[in-house]
Length: 148
Length: 148
Length: 148
Length: 148
Image 1: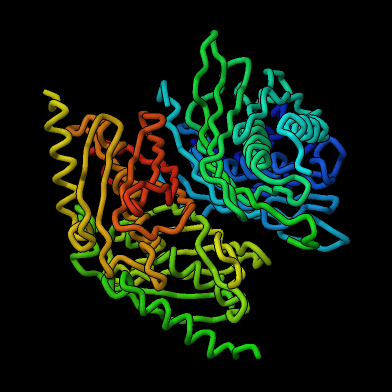
Image 2: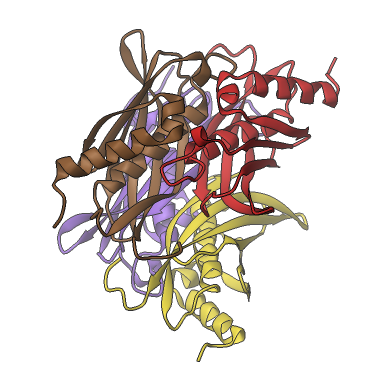
C-alpha cells in the first residue's frame, strides 16, 4: 500500500529536521507539496561570513536539502530513495537581510534522475530579494540496490 | 607596496577562520599557497545528514570557502577583493569516514573571473577517498567599486 | 544617444544570424525582447547523434547563443559587450521530435555578471516537450577593456 | 564474452565519427583509452562566432561527445549504454587559434553515474592554450530498460 501524501510529507519533514546539521544550522521545513519543498532559516552570527552576509555554505545547505526533498516527493518511498548527484549554484546578490527562504521545484521527474530548480530569497527591509539560483540533479535509487 | 605572500596567506587564513560559520562548523585552514588552498574538518554528529554521512552542505561549505580563497591568492589584495559567483558540485561517493579535506586549485586566473577546481576527500579507515568534485567561478572586484 | 530597443534587437539578431556556425546549423532568431531571446531550428540528419536524436552539441549551441543574447539585451551596447562565462546544461528527455526551440530569460542582471536561465523544447507530434534546462553566467565587459 | 578493449575503442570511435553532427562539424576522434577520450577539430569559418573565435557550441559539442565516450569506455557495452545527463562548461579564454583539442577523463566511475572532467585546448601560434574546462555527469543505462 502506498502512503498518502500527507504521510509522505510528514516523513520528509521529519527526516530533514532530524539531521544533525539541520539542527546545528537551525533551519525549518516551511512546506512540503508534491514536487515543491520550501525551507527557511533566520540570521544568526554563526551563519555569516566575514562581511556579515549569510555564508554561501548556508545557502548551499538549503539548496542541497530542499532540492533533494522535492525530488523525494515524486518517488514511491517504500521502494526507492533519493540522493543528491550534483548541483550548480549562482550567488546573484549579497544576502544582507535577516531571513533566508529556499524554494525548490521539480522541473522534470524521471525514473532514474530528477531535475530540480531552486531559488533562494533573503528578506531585507521587509521585501524578498533573490540571492541565489540553482539547478540540481537528484538520483533515485532502488532500496534493494546494495551499492551506488 | 604589495604584501609578501606569507602576509597574504596569513590574512586569508585569518579571514576564513574568523567567519562565524567556520567557527560553527569547526573547520580549519590546512594550507594557503599561491593558487591552492586546503581546508579540513572532523566528523561530529552535528555535521551529518540522516544516514550518518557528512551533509552535502558541509561539503559545499568547504568548496565555497576553499575555491574563493584560492582565487584570492592571485589578486592584489590592496586593490581588489574576491566573491563567489557560482559553483557546481558533484557528490561522487558517500562520505562515511571521519575527516574531510578539500583541496581547491586555480585552473585559470583572470582579470575579472578566476576559475577554480576542487576535490573533496573523506578519510575512511586510514585512506583518502574522493567524495566530491567541483568547478567554481570567482569574481574579482575593484575595492572602489560600490555595487556588484 | 542610446539606441532604441528595436534597433538593439535588430543588431542582436543580425549578429547571431551572421555567425558562421549559426549558418552551418541553420538556426533562426525567433524573437528578441528585453531580457528574453528565443532561437529555434529544424531537424536535419546533420544535426543528429547516432540514435536519431538532436545532438547535445546542437542543444548547447542554442543555449550558448540565446543566453548570451538575452544578457546582451540588458547592457548599453555602445559602451559594453557580453561574453559567455559558463553554463550548465541538464538534458532531461530525448529530443526525438522535428523542431527545437530555446527560450532564454535573464534571472538577474548585474553590472558585471548577468545570470540567465534557459529551457529547450522539442516539438514532437505537435506538442512541445521539455528536453533541456540550463543556467548560465554571462560577463559584461567594458569595450575599452583590452583583455578579459 | 566481453569485447577486448581495442574492439570497444573501435566501436566508440565508429559511433562518434558516424554521427551526422560530427560529420557536419568535421571532428575526429584522436584516441580512446580506458577512461580517457580525446577529440579534435580544425578551424573553419563555419565553426566560428562573430569575432572569429570558435563558437561556444563547437566547444560544447566536443565536451558532450568526449565526456560521454570516456564514460562509455568503463561499461560493459553488451549490457549497458551511456547517455549525457548534464555538464557544466567554463569558457576561460578566447579560442583564437587554428585547432581545438578536447581531453575528457573519468574522475569517478559508478554503477549508475560516471563523473568526467574535460579540458579544451586551442592551438595558437604553435602552443596549446586552455580555453575551456568542464565537469560532466553521464548516466549508465541497462539496455533492457525500456524508458529512462
